[in-house]
Length: 233
Image (cartoon, rainbow, N blue to C red; front, side, top):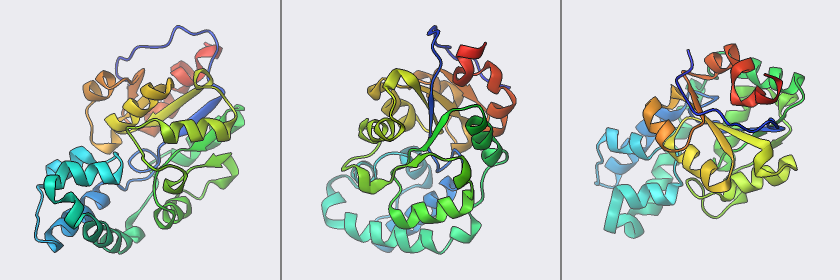
């Protein structure tokens, strides 16, 4: 069931739906947590896994600064390289969440512009897109190469809006982290949170979500009553 959110009072519904991928459409967050955990150990700077989880979804530079502190400049590049190595060895375990493909295809069928708004580097994005295998329902894709700084900065959302050719008021973001919600709010875009990334409903709402659903399967079930379809209700 959807969690109580604040539904927009706007009478004009969104034309475009922007989707985060990691933790929202693809079950990948905990693979990232494990890869970062191993990477920190590799540079002799272990970080508690729960702290890593709390930083998942934010820009990698900000993640490293948050978790390494004063050692970020000295160790950051080595940690990134180790993370890439460990994560790449687990991509065979990636899988789309239940109904992720169905949701994207249903939105495309209903005339919404679907944008995959991720800051994943190209090698990770290629694996995510191969896992989703739903190019027939996607109109545009972003990657980490499109912006200098990712979430919670609004830059990536702004690129996604440009590619969808819509204004902020004509879009809604679906994401799994507080960083997604914060980024959308800073870009003036409505947002929907899902719990599949490991953040709580209250956290997502406080960060700016207009509504929260258990996962994308739950969102699909309640699509007609969601902020995505507010102009048709």
